[in-house]
Image (cartoon, rainbow, N blue to C red; front, side, top):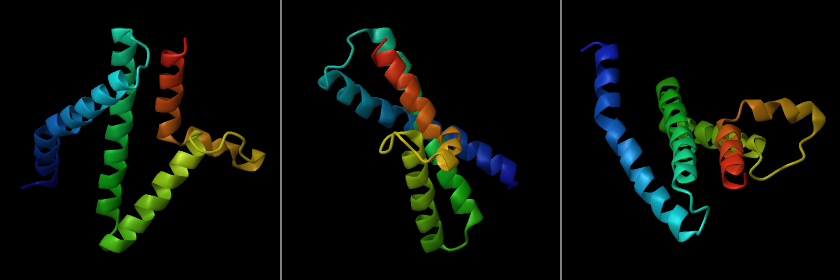
Length: 121
């Protein structure tokens, strides 16, 4: 098989699981957490959540294709994801001015900011 046909088949066959399982867990957490009761805000926040899940999964695929060694890919993945979390605003709000530009690289920032705007508008 060609790589393009393998990748397309993999994406089509795994997409339902990538969307259904996080949707079930997020739905439980959202409604049990007594967040905003508006259903359209729930759908918007679910869209942001699924965006973050799919981008994180894509970064995992990129790292697995880039590294031949599982341990190196695991370490690089942890460092990259933790760096994105730190830059995205989850743990640190005031970053040094020379490092402030990294927040625009973090995919967590966009999902986090969008969810905050929806939840507290």
